[in-house]
Length: 420
Ligand code: GLC
Image 1 (cartoon, helix red, strand yellow):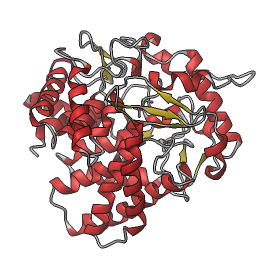
Image 2: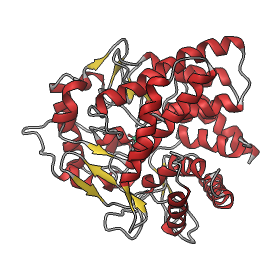
Image 3: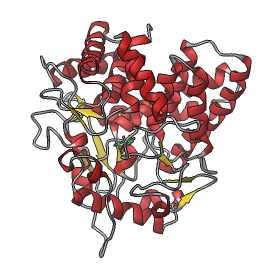
Image 4: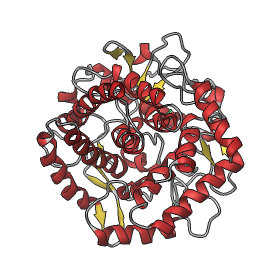
């Protein structure tokens, strides 16, 4: 274990550029990604708190004037990547993508602050960070829930972070591919195509992106006209947890939080509407096509991370989760293995992802100690055996996708070193 801790730290440091860290050191993701940076910052916090704060501050430098924090920042423009900064053609001071990702950075910042001593100089940086994060959360409320119903939408599957999850199959099936679409994928030159999304998925990703771009990424307009608009359980759970955590941080530093508390309360009530009491699980909702999405994804269990104030539902969800991959050596498959869409090797349609395990572990810690420890131990065992890869085969643990993967290394450090 000591040896792997060293390797984990080295993995992060090798992937580090000037004040930000790449998701991996191969050619697959040569830029800064939003939620990757959050997990990476948590990893750094276990051995270099300044690197953790730098990682977050660099990401926030890419924040748009309206508050949005993009899902990709292209600090280095000379990179081979699709879709690169010229294809997105947006960003303020820093070239970026025109969409966002789950705002887990808020809760991770709180976790870092709760677990480490902070100097006066660091505190100054932190106050700036907290104010920017508040603006980010307000952006979601303003533009992704314009009628203030309590739940926010994503307008592109890439925003979820689980790009080709089967959750999106139905809404994506309704997206018309743009005529005469031309582009060249780079990912399948680096990773075996059977472990990546299909071309027909990419056609739709690019069509949605082009539509957002044609509308100048105008957030006022796009909620109602986007080709894709889904209220996802995982995303809303991370968002609700972020609201709760930022309110605590704002109070701690004497910054006004009253403009968020009302929405947090509404969101707490509304998220229960995604609960299916017969199946005992939370499901996503396709706003565009007005349809419930009943795909059993591990991300539906992120509801535990939202810490909803409903013991009965939490208990039922935990019971259900215990059956999700019952008795299996490796957990958790991104999609439930008995579902028709399950694919052993294809990215978010079956493989195990360390960040999903970590989020669920965090959500369970204060609800079911022995189950949460089981998840922690199985995740650590998998990483001890296979090292830091992007994802893993649920049936046999085989490592897949990118190697030297930053968030797997970072979350290993947190699982092993965080004693709380
Ligand atoms: C892929 C993943 C996404 C991640 C990014 C960089 O797009 O689906 O979650 O942030 O790669 O690692």
